[in-house]
Amino acid sequence: MGETTGCPSADIRELIRHIGARVTLRGWLYGKRAGGKVVFLVVRDGTGLAQCVVEASNAAAFAAAEDLSQESSLTLTGTVRAEARAPGGAEVAVETLDVLQRAEAYPIGRKAHGADFLFSHRHLWLRAPRQTALLRIRHTVVQAVRAFFDERGFTLIDTPILVPGVGEDRQSLFTVDYFGAPIYLTQTGQLYLESACLALGKVYSFGPTFRAEKSKTRRHLTEFWMVEPEIAFAELEEVMALAEGMVTAVAAAVLARHRDDLAALGRDAAALARIVAPFPRLTYSEAVDILRGPETRARMESGMSDSRTQLQARMDELKVAEAEAAAARKGWKQEQAETRARELRETVQELERELRVAPEHLALAQSFEWGKDLGGSDETILSRRFDRPVFVTEYPREAKAFYMKVKPEDPRVVCNFDLLAPEGYGEIIGGSQREERLPVLLEAMRAKGLRPEDYDWYLDLRRYGSVPHGGFGLGIERVLTWLCGLQHVRETIPFPRTMGRVQP
RNA sequence: UCCGGCGUAGCUCAAUGGUAGAGCGUCUGGCUGUUAACCAGAAUGUUACAGGUUCGAGCCCUGUCGCCGGAGCCA
Image: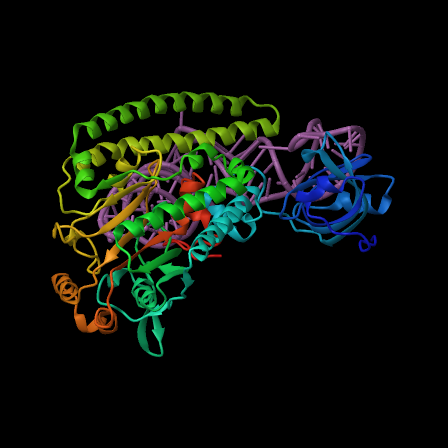
């Protein structure tokens, strides 16, 4: 149709700066209000939404505009003008319109959809405003993590994804055929990082990890991305300070760059503003005392009573919404009431589930025995007591991995920490000082039933210039779930792999 | 693997064991500087699959499959 070259193409985000200028937009049709003598096109280009006006006097462009379907690809030229009635305060008066492809009936509407449908259409769902907000925040988290380590003299080390089996926890390893012999997808790069930190001092890895855990929960992916720093000549304190610094830096970066995206997600920015050092600290033994103590019982019982009140209120609201939906004359008002009813039903189900499991969780916490690892519900109970992340340190050695350093002053525990995100989100980081003494390490391996000959190269690191060192691993998707205030980890990765889904 | 829930139009959901429906989307027409536009009309179904009970099954029973949530395990 029209000639669209000859004037600069603009990002919609920058549109307001081009008032009076002639620009080219390249994008997709997000919405249309059409007919009569004027068509309003809402165009998206990945940076924002722009209202573009086509008038009937422009016959060619008008005919093309009237025929456009949702998500049709297009380029257009026009003049930017200030317009109070347009979202964003500016609109484009269209002069020429070229349709690259008229989209077929688009499966994803701008109304409510179920999770299964959306994840089946993940390749298209990514275009939704909420999803692009998440993708942008994910990018910032990755970028902030890299910047944090780069600024502190760390070297990026890419650890292998195909790894030989190492005797422990075989059931959560994915097996791959490697020229006729089994090999496994990596679950952590830590052992390799320990090697690299003895070469470079401060290193980190950033890559995908794989866990064949048969966990169908909102916290689990079978493929997720992990950041793992490792530093030589470091003891536990230094590693914890690093974790604290990294988490605050990431939260600050998201807060600084994504006010709009957080708002689009319905996330209260104040929750991120609270993420400042120092984070509270508990030892494992203190955590156990808290779990078993009367205050936990009191808090949980009052929490349950709050939940019951909430449940009743939501159920009443649900009845109103359902009645409104049934009585609504206008289509979209019915849709709106149904959407609200749907959300309320989900909330009600969630509250009922909480109330069902809470007594169980309370009983587990109250009867917690020193020596076990903290369970998911225990972490939730602990993290709900704080408004910022909390460190839990010095776990019993039998509950933790063989490579963690035994605390010299108390050999029942190891020099490790978990960092629990607040608001019930739970563990986002696990870290430790590593055992650098060869005899102690060998003894720990035997105690866990591991064969030292399987770890021969790793043990070399204790034979040739061993030093105190340590590090941690942080799961990017869990951090995003927390920072964005989501219910599910699945939305934080572009193409999630869960136990029940590998498509698309 | 175990426990619980769900499966009806492209989507979101209705339908005492008794004629399968609504809204959105799609298509057609009208109308308007519109803001999830509006108005009128049309098309759209192996009720997940396989058996069973019944005069009659979307609904009850059995099995299978799929999805969701939880437990164990974990970042």
